[in-house]
Image (tube, rainbow, N blue to C red; front, side, top):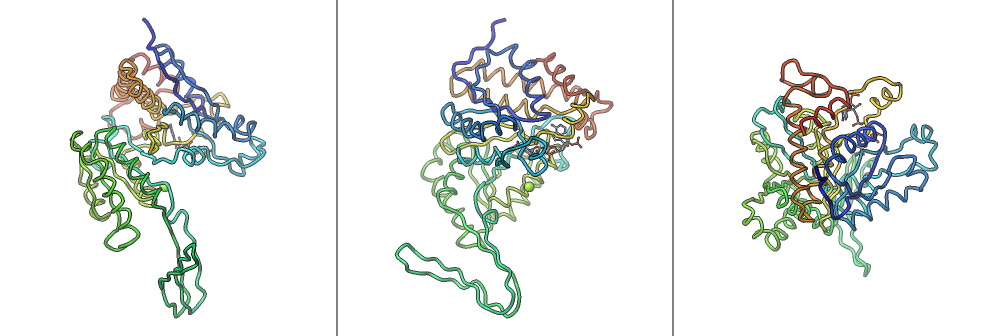
Length: 398
Ligand code: NAP
Ligand code: MG
């Protein structure tokens, strides 16, 4: 059999610990036998980040601007314990943060839905994708404890020195205060990423804020989305047969619970943080969540939503058997390959991505799965496979 050819490379960002082990197995068992895999390889493993003073992370993000599509393995975000473990020169920043700052995108997280792993919400039949704005609000807030009586004001000083003031509160005793902000440009790129991704995946887009209470702050989000939609996307949405729908956050929450899924829910930063944890745990497992960073210019970086599964890696190092779920990492690869195929007009590559996803889902639905899923499945007497056994079971079907 001839291998499927690729014309443009993917940016491949290797990572750490157990996911680095899975990464190699996935390539050897599921990709390289069928595809003449072309990647530009960046080793974001912590040792190599440390050797290159983290330059490799920056280089991999710049390469993503060049080639437009990247696939990333989970990576360690260093903390004090990792400083000793890896003898680091510095506590390097989170690679995801560095890459996001360079590509300026929105992160979309979606569950992989299979029969036998049932969501807690019984009417959810299709995935709900959460799009979280990744800039500002309480994550860049300034706070004060107010010790006693006094006045708190917001003061804006323009470049010409003129000032505008708003009273926050006249305190007659102790209290607290918080100042938050956002930037028009960031909200605009959030909106464009959401509209493009909705078109890309042919799903409706929902957006919700608390604009009835926050008449300037949240209302600005609503207005920016609407202006961009009217000017740039309305026609395209019509052609694609999808809808943009704005509602109040309270109404959105109620509708989400009663819906059958199958749409993108765009959330402000805090709402997205909280709602993505709710949606992912309600769908079953973090090991079944994919994540893609979409930049407003149309660069895509695919990854699993989970981390490096450190506890399993230490077992692996001791020579013990592991049963680590590789589904989200496989879907990061299929997402990237499908997008590469789409951009290059490479139909064979897109079809391969579909087949690999189907083989993965069929394997689980036939009752062959890793331990994390076996614990929550409704399938009777599932076969629990180890990390490698599961990938081999998929390869057999593929
Ligand atoms: P984690 O790697 O997501 O794992 C947390 C726990 O969730 C695991 O111990 C395991 O539970 C379960 N789990 C997660 N993924 C699984 C999988 N594929 N198969 C089976 N079980 C899975 O989070 P963490 O332990 O908090 O973080 C480990 C490292 O990952 C940290 O250094 C962190 O910085 C990094 N991290 C990276 C990313 C990223 O690159 N995007 C994201 C998050 C965290 P049991 O132990 O109960 O089996
Ligand atoms: Mg959270």
